[in-house]
Amino acid sequence: MFEKAIRIYYEDTDAGGVVYHSNYLNFMERCRCDWLESLGHNIANIQQNDNIIFVVREVNIKYDLPARLFDRLTVSVKPLQVGKVMLLLEQKIYNQDQLICQATIKLATLHHSSFKLSAMPVSLRAALSEEV
Image (cartoon, rainbow, N blue to C red):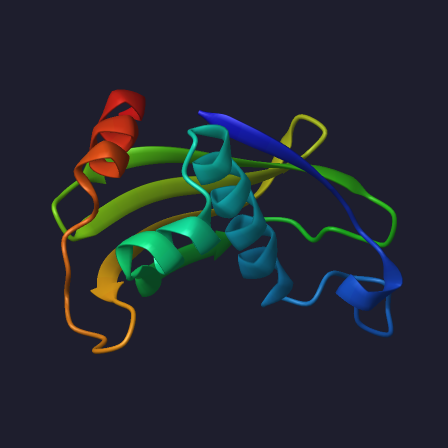
């Protein structure tokens, strides 16, 4: 499991100081990018060198409690399943020790220019499989 710290700023909140619902997905995206980089696979390099992009295919998200202005959150990512063209992840967001949001996210890998399903590079798939 990989974790990333996030701090909530004005831009993340609505007028009442509560994090806007779609921003939780942004926090999860940032965590996924940093996780892949920690495994030695930078998203930009994957696109440039392998002509592969990740796209969100499905999201099942549950909001339990709101995050608020200046909270310090922890976002985690854990792979559940790694396939040739698919990656299933569990992501959670905590405010201190309190779970506030969780999601199951299915990603697909597509060829950068054709947007057709395309297999992940073998080295990437192997690195991800070690995390399951």
